Length: 610
Image 1 (cartoon, rainbow, N blue to C red):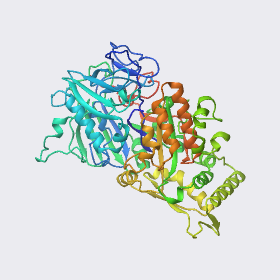
Image 2: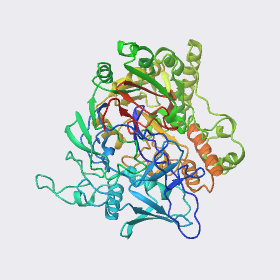
Image 3: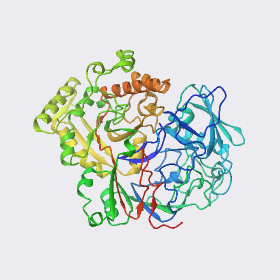
Image 4: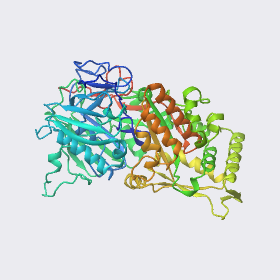
């Protein structure tokens, strides 16, 4: 799965798509693109992506927002909160097409090649690629960026753990070598990370201080990408300006893209204040996270007069699975027993929440790959069953006998039955309801904190807290600022959180970071639940080693089934659509890409002049 940061629900997630490669002939051949399902749709001499407006004007200002704060521009380290939009000042080796599943085309790299056994990949840089100061982008920059990312980011270190070396193998060539062969994902994913200028980082800042890639910084960085940092107020606002001298503006992959002259971000601590700023016309675009607000709060005059346009689009979810969940931290003793975790699910009344808070606009998530062909269902069959049979002694027995389903509430009788079931499960796990408290054999109460990073989530979590109290569980909500939340998440300093994982149609190395044993204590990993399970580890290995698509799908479904049967999370909900509203000064091509909305890259400002 390809790494990318997206404002997706309540978290930043990894949403782009990996492109494992087709096996080559005995002699490596140069390629302009990577693909997994068939061949790239666009030939080597393509003129532009099919979903852009090649005549889109360059100009105008796009005013956006984000929640929380920022304290760094460094995109390669785990420290600090990176500024929204910072990716726009950097280029990567390859760039994804949003019109194809698992296809990328060259950006900094004009071509790539790899041997038949996929033990390495070589990228050839474009001779015209330049940094903002006019110096060429060199293999040394790629090596510096990759080594820095692995050294200073747990996420990158896990994602690229199979890359054992990167070296300069030509004047414009850099080669990545792997510790395993025939892993179709590896040659492609090393084209993902942002490339930073080695010579700039090895220099000194305006105060004469040596720059340090391992630290956060608010010094405006230099990049090779289409935008530059023009102005900012720390933690509050940031302004990007389109570079007139951007080296890659006429590349086919960039034609019709990067159309706004200025993009600004304003940060808000309160989502309601953020929404009111949009209503007042201070912001140009708003991605709605609340189904209830979408249903009830868009009756203001600008909507009625056609000045504000609303769209609910399924595009980004057509090839994206989502698990959104309440996640108990199994590093805490009270959550180690699967029966406790299952009981927590019985206490969640999705149907009542969906009716009263979301006006029926949500769907309950019942798979870690929800909404895709990779989601497990019914009972295992065929190759999936064979895989699970080989793990029979390591997986819950219900994997073979009972399809996973979430408890169903929505009326008083069902809710009472669910809470009774929860009490039974807790008693089996050593907890007992005495008076109005759930206690263990030492009379210690079951008590935990639900950590949130946005007040907007409280309205969905507080009914759950009230339900838990009915069975004697003392659950409390604590909402903290984004900096504190980020630091606590990275160090696993929480009892329970609200989290989102995004999956693509081609799961790969990132699964170990999500669920693998080696990531349990790796600071900054996305193994939020603290999963350390031998069957899960073996299934992740099978996914990465799958020789063909059928074997991969079978292993992914088996993994999904085992994760669900262990009740590692309390599945929540999603709408399956991205809900956006924008002032009519903005527009986009008539046909958006099949698997995305191209925002803001392919949008433009009405009335802008070239």
